[in-house]
Length: 198
Figure 1 (cartoon, rainbow, N blue to C red):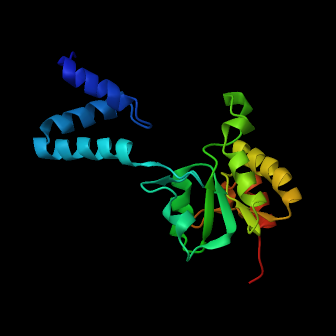
Figure 2 (figure 1 turned 90 degrees about the horizontal axis):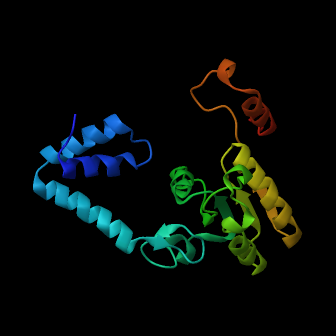
């Protein structure tokens, strides 16, 4: 089936979004076509504003609309701790727990030699500079529990320990609500290593 040119262009652009295949893009395009003009204008304006007003914090690389960001400038945050995450969206995951009140550092990825991502492609030098400036007592490595995340955590630990800070790794293990029989070997190993006294 052929579509009018503007609709074809919209479908092609929507398909470029992560997790959106051809069918989903087509459904979204037809939904937008049926949506009142004012709603489409609001969507377009919100997308435009994100590109115009959102930037990366010059200190921690988190997304922000003011530089430096809220976390870096807040006097109520613990400036002695830095939680290192791979991507800006990971900050929200940590914040949801309400268990952490320190600062953040976003690496903008993880080491992945297969994909051509090396140490110089990440915000590692900025992290080392922040720690070397003094005042930081603990760096929490909260990279993803996959091969790239583990390699990144190990690499960072080797660089950070000589700077005299405590370097910790988030505990990982069996997710709440799952069965042990479905846990893989690495997950079970992490769960056993991260166990705590009740």
